[in-house]
Length: 441
Image 1 (cartoon, helix red, strand yellow):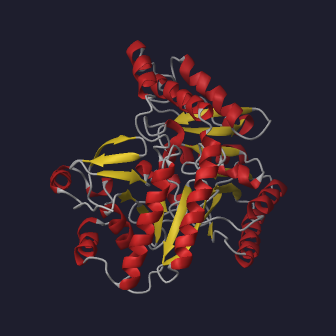
Image 2 (cartoon, helix red, strand yellow; image 1 turned 60 degrees about the horizontal axis):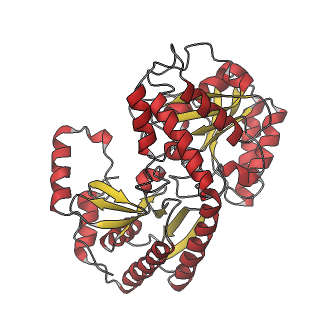
């Protein structure tokens, strides 16, 4: 396949300007590429290069590009851009709340709290848990990522993002291993029960599939047993569906794979298909209404153009059967990538995931940056991968739900090409050099 010189001159210029005016904590670094547009399942950079998008704006742009949904936002904004929902409610937000109540599992009475990001929504869910249970402790898992706000960050255990900012009491945020084996499952459940028996813990906040940790799936039965244990101690289960929700894993919500009903669901990212910053907490009415009026308010809570747009995102997904499509296309893509893994086991350790949330773990036995190199080389060949994981060892493959069959074939073809180059030691030196120059994350 043809190759690009990335980042190109225009992207480098953007990066140079960024470093002069943007605080470094706002930019983590990936490939140094500035994205300026998109079409279908492809994105276009400042130099005019086109890539198959496997990052989708950190798993937000689930409908790809050019869906036309932005017209709904514009139409509502033309009528009324902002009502101050907390003082003057608007119908679009109420209609969306009804949609989300219908769309989420559970036949009990539910309500919704709107926010602006997955971070504030995870924090709000913890606040509701604390008010309802009158217990401050919230259990989460090592390598979880729930956000960067006052409660979501201490609940996370990812890299060193809390350093110098938060110093929470360990008993308020106990962390355990996210179990991917039977042995880990039994040990983690044992430790969680000990926490619950202390009387200090009100619930668990967890990712149904650990995302930024590298697409880690819990061992079968773990979440079911966890929910049963929580019920015994009158504690809550809060699931963070920020990355896994809205059809990404082949169900509307990844928790549906487990066939249980959580107390609260947190959603953001794909909720608006990347068109607007919005989040929601959906769940038990009695838990959500334990917070008093005004306790979970933002100026742009229930923003009318944003909520109108999300309602259209839901309709669009339903009209085009994108949840089923995610399951089908994801299975095809994963199967083909697993065939490549079997060809190059010395390069690719494992391919895992559900639906169109796929992680490809790279063997990191030499330099320790092999996954970054793999991803950068893929970008040079026109596939916009991401990478994440505890040690940045996993290539992130989360394309839009509308991905084309020919794009799936190209992803697989490039994956095989890069794996072959890595096996033979034929990765260009300039590719490796660019990792050190542009990938600060």
